[in-house]
Structure formats: C-alpha cells, structure tokens
Image (cartoon, rainbow, N blue to C red; front, side, top):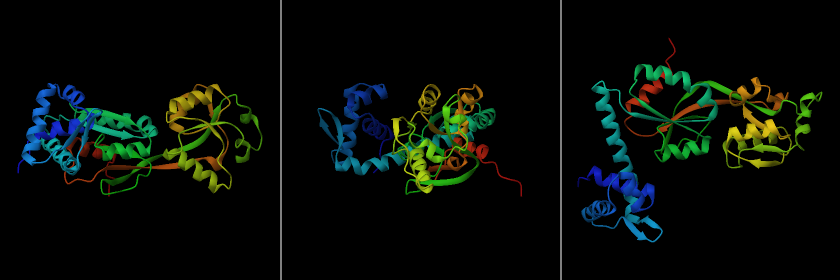
Length: 300
C-alpha cells in the first residue's frame, strides 16, 4: 500500500499543531480541505487516526502506530530532495543545528562562515539550549544535529564524534562582590551566599550538584532558577548572587568589568563536547557538509 506524501504531511502537521485549525493555517489550506485529506488517509488504512475532541485532535492507537513510520517517511523524502539538489549543484537545503551556549558563541560563527562560503545557498537555523532540551529536539526532529556535553545514546540518537574543543565552568560574581577581596577563599565561603542557577532538571545544575557532592559539601541554596545564561549574568552583575557558567558565556561581561570569576579552582570544571545526530540510514547532504567543516580530518 503506497502512502501519499501529502496525506502524511497533513497527518504530521495535525499531530504537531494539535488541532485542525492550526494545522490548516500552517499548511496554508482550508480546514475542510485538510479534513478531506485526513479522511482519505483514514479510509485508505481502514482505521481512525484521530479522536476529534473539543480540546483538539488526539491520536488513536492506530495513529500512534503510524506516527513513527510517517515521521521516517517524511524525513527520508526530505533527504532525497536534499540529495538531488546537491547532485544538481544547487546547494539548497536547511541545516538545523542545536548547540549549548558555549558552542554557539565560541565555535559556530567561524564554522558556519566556512560552510556558507562553500555552500552559499544553504539556510541555517540555530537552537541554543542545554543538553536535555537538545536531546528532546533531536528525537522530535526539531534539529538535525546537536553539539553539547554528554547525551545518552539510544535507539533514536547516536554519537558521531567527540569535538576537538572544550570549555570550563567557573563560579562568577559581580566584579565588586565582597568575596572577590577575601583572602584564601574556599568552597565553604560560598555556601551561604544566594545563587542563581538553571533548574534542577537541567544538565548544568546536575553537574554542579555532583561537583559539590564530590567536594564533600551540600549544594548551596539556589534562590533564582532560570535556563537563560543572559538572565544569570544580569542577576550576578547587578546583585550579590553567585552563578556558575562556562567562561565563553561571560567573557564579554568580564572584559567590560561587570563580572569576574572567583578564585576557586576546585569548583572549575572542564566540559568536553560531543556531536550527536539521529540514527538513520541516510545523512542529509547539508549535515554531512557541516560535519566535514566542524570535524576536519587530521593529517596522518
């Protein structure tokens, strides 16, 4: 049984949007036209794919069974188009990159400049997020590649390589913070100071808590939680709160004299980076080209 790509696209858009109205807007068609498309797919399969509820469209068990296959078929169709355009020398396509903040500011600018010099018609989208968010984005096909600290490999995600760059976390404070002048500063001196950190489910927070436990102390009290490095830096620069960020993310503020790292070598932590993609048989040409530039082969 052959499945119509237009019907699969309609099916996946409804799943993504959650309602016929929003999906119709996303596809730039009328709602009745979208309903007819889905009805034809259901008639072809002989089963209902959605339950129509007042709150939106919910997948039936049959729809749940179709979803992973429809996703793979849609992805492979996109890959085929990318490959054909590449062979025609057009260099068209979209590359969706997910990266932690340090990589986004420290590595991607130069890499993308080289990539786009070779493939100028390529369109690039960048998502900056921490590891757990990138893991979800990769499995849900929101991004094509993730560059981050460790992410568990799974049936959906595979590690491509370890990157040849890294960063280092440090405790940061306002440049005029009293702790900057304290002699012989130790970890225990920062335990009773308020902190601003990512939420407890974020990978940087888990790493921080693990580091504190390895040092034999209870993690300090976090009074403000945010996943935004910009908010962390603003809170640190303008208050007596402490934070913990990779050096590339506060380099500009340090140069401007707003933020300084505290001299706590035991709380500095080097982070290695890895490259991940979804497990599938065919790699999109834009991703393949990007990996060539990001991970150049070393001479023998």
